[in-house]
Image: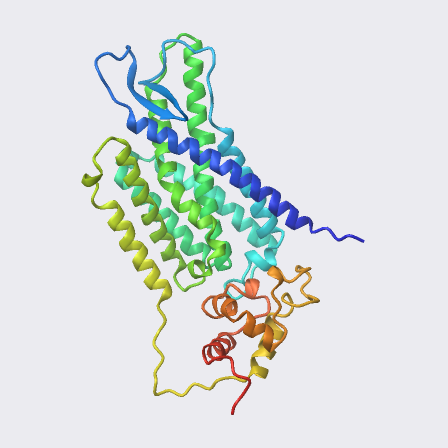
Length: 402
C-alpha cells in the first residue's frame, strides 16, 4: 500500500503559493513606494495632479501620474492591488498551521523552554497575531502617531518585546518564525483594515460626486510606508528556520532587533535614492547596516576560549554512539521510531560511528553550536551530552583511548 505523506504535500503546496503571492505583494508594494517617491512636479501638470514619473521597461516608455487626492471623476477601469497581500497571509498561515500546529510537539513546543500542551501553544500563537495587530493599530491611532520617529520607535519596541516573550514561550525556531508572522499579520492588517477600506471610501465619494477626504489617502500612504520598512526584516525572519545560529542562542530576541535595524537601514537607502538624491549624499545607511551585520556575525559566532591548562576528557566512539542512539536515531535511522517521522530527514542516518563521522559537520551545527536538534528537544538531550559530542568531533573523532 502506498503511504502518502499528506503533511509534506500540504507543506509544499502552501509554501509554493506563499512564495508566489509574497513575490507579487512585495513587487507591487516596492514599485508603488518607488513611484510615489520618484514623482516630480512641474508647471505644466494638469490640475489636481501632484507629480509624474517617467518609467522605461521592456522596451517601452510609461508616464505615471498621481492625483493629490483623486481624479475629478471615476475612470472606466481601475486596477486594485489587494489579493496579493491576502493570499500571502492566508497561504502563510496555512503553512504555519501545517508545520507548527499539526507538528506542535516537534516544532512549536520546547518543553525545556515552557512545558505547554499543544492546544495551549496554538492558542498563544493565534493570540500573538491578533494582539500584535491590535496594539500596533492603537499606536497608529494614538495622539503621538503624528510624530513619525516616535511612532517608529514604539513599533520597534513592540516587536522587540514580542520577540523576547516568544523566545520564552516556544522553541527558538518557532519563536523566530512567529515574530515574522506577527509582523506579517500587521502588514496585511494595514491593507485589509486601513488601505483598501479607505480607497473604497474615496471611490464611493467620487461616484456620489463628492469631494473625497484627503485624510483617507494620507492614512493609507502612512500604513503603506510602514509595510515597506518592515518587509526586509520579515523576509529574513521567515527563512530563519534554515539558520539555527539566528534563533538558537540565549538572546535571540536581540538578534531580531538587529535584523529590524539592518533591514530598515537598507530600505531607507533605496527609498531616499528613489527621490533623486545623489548616491554620494547617502552616507550612513549602508555603513550602518554593515556595522550592525558585523556585530551580529561576531556575536553569534563567538565562542568562549577554552582554558589550555584544563584537561578535557575526550569521549570514546562508544560513548557518542550511545548518545546518538538515544537522542538522534529515533528520526535518523533506516527504521525510524518517532511517530511523527516516517523517513530520515535528508536521508541522514546517525546510528553508527561511521554515520556520525560522515555527518559530523551537521551534528556540530545542529546539536552542539545550536539546539536545533533534536526537534523540540523531545528526547531531552542535556548540555553535557551536547558538549561531549562537540569535544569528540573537535578531537578528530577517535575510536577510543589509546
